[in-house]
Image 1 (tube, helix red, strand yellow):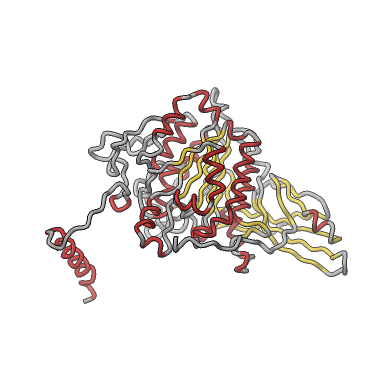
Image 2 (cartoon, one colour; image 1 turned 135 degrees about the horizontal axis):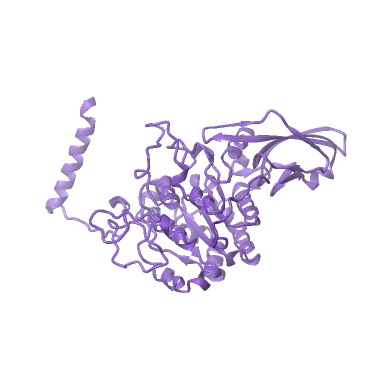
Amino acid sequence: MVFNKNLPQIVCNDLDWVKCHLSECAVVPSILSSARDIKCHFYNIIHKTDRDYYVDSISTMITGDEVFTLKNSDNVKVRCTGRALANDRLLKWIGVVSGLRSKVKSLGSPPGRENTINVLMFGYDSTSRNGFIRKMPESYEYLKNDLEATFLTGYNIIGDGTTWALHALLTGRNELDLPEARKRFVKTFLNNSDFIFHKLRKDGYRTAYYEDSPNMGTFQLRFQGFAEQPADHYLRDFYFELSKLSTDKQNEFCVGDTPSYTFLMNITQQFFTQDGKKFCFTKVGDMCHYDFNLLASADKDFVKFLRWFKETGRLQNTLLMIFGDHGVRRTDVRATYQGKMEERLPLMAIVLPEQLIKSRPEIKSALKANADILTTPYDIYNTVLDAVDMTDHWITYKVKGADLPRGLTLFRPIPSTRSCSEAAIENRWCTCHTWQTIHSSNKRYHLAAAALVDHINDVTKSIR
């Protein structure tokens, strides 16, 4: 609890002139009522690869309360001018806004698959289950009591950091299973077809991948990223262009006048108002990556976000997963035993849609029975595919000597005897180990010390 601090709420002091809803962007009422002769030029931000984008040199102008429609890009840069009604002073504003361009169309579902369920995976960086309970108590209570979420208490990371978790969540594999795409080894991009976005889009789903913090993006910090954007809707270029405009540390976690986490919630809600089947993966990174205590700022807004999904009836046919990639890794809490455990036990809460429970009533009790069993991101990938009835894409790989596949579905009983080795969890990340103090008279005590000294001598040999 020494590390648990109450920080001020994130407040954004910028003023947005323009906002978008779905495909329509317009000047906000407060500006329309305080300025005249308003002119805004919209420049499309065009994605090329995860390493390259450009802002179109040709603009479209609107005046006053006219509407600009997003067609060629979800993301636009805007330059506006006007004159203050109070003193006729020239006013200028430059910003970046995002919505959902109108040209994106679903590929259409195969016959008989038109009504499979939607999926929303909404995550927070560096968030353990216990950390979520401490910093977002209202959200925890709403998930637990109002939405009857199942919290996985035995949900264990499989390797170090975000990429290990999200590779498994989105491909069912880890980064070593997939073709080499690390920046320091190759200039090859990640293969879109390995990811669940690609598989679901081919099945007729609209897809969205929303993540802030482009400078440390999950698949771009150590990896080359994607040659083509992985989902229909994507925010990487938006956040990059936004970072060029904003140098104010006070608005570090803001998108204009809105906290970045609220912006991500808003754009996710808009995505779910579209027709057809939908898969969305949203991850809040910036604020909780650098100081986990800031997560508390999002608590009340997240309850509103969850309540919107319930009250609009969208949870009837949407599988909801609230997750963390891992626990806190950047502060002194990691040196404590509790910190080491929480790093290895991230948040995973699952809300089943009524549509799925009605068609498969047995999955509710199976999920509850698996709540305290050892589970991993590999299992989440297979569970999502099970929920949308695409088990032909399951990853069925088995660890050598194991009886069960590495990834299982949470909709069937998982043995309580499952081990970390069977689940392909690297030894150092396994929370199932029991720790014992070894007396100095024990032979292993001295063998361990000698092994450490030998290793140090070996790695320093070339420079001694």
